[in-house]
Length: 235
Image (cartoon, rainbow, N blue to C red; front, side, top):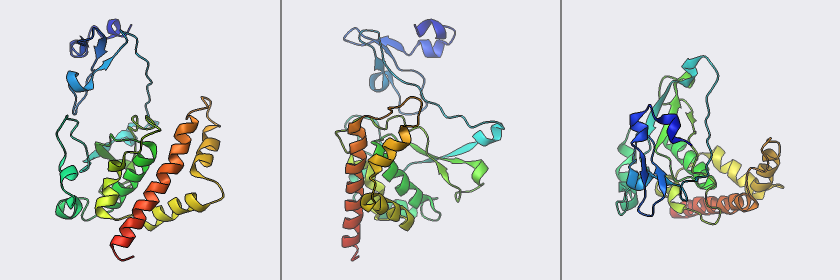
């Protein structure tokens, strides 16, 4: 059903292929890390279930202008090829402390905040940080975290490597810690607050109970890691 809609786009058509198992696959057009071998989505044999999400701010179009800041903790997306941060336990000291803009602006704190957010939702795919220029002309503006499509995939797995910015740099905003701790000791858990918020969505229920429970479990692991950082630094 999709192929006839893109027949005029020879580049897109070329990304359709059959897998060795005879399933019909689509790789699509991707700017980074994509190839048919690693990035194809295959049907069974041709039916594929998925979802589409997009966030487009309202006009004027100037609101869409943004800069990409490469995430130094990005993954290689290659089998058996580790990124530098995965091989160097002192990556923060050896690289990040000498890397602009992370060594001279709020960006390192932003990266840690984003890592905590990604860990809570289970998103391993943070290639870039995005600065919307409408919020500022330099690296002091607030990051916008979109492209979170890999989030809430596996509720039974907590990928601790997502927290590498926190574990390697042992740095976190006090306001972030205070909010996390408040969610941990407060009268209402993170899962309860999320459940109540999502109940207002027209498509409710949005998350399964296992995903909501994972939020509380992962929150505990974030706070446990912060505690280890405090102990390791004499706190």
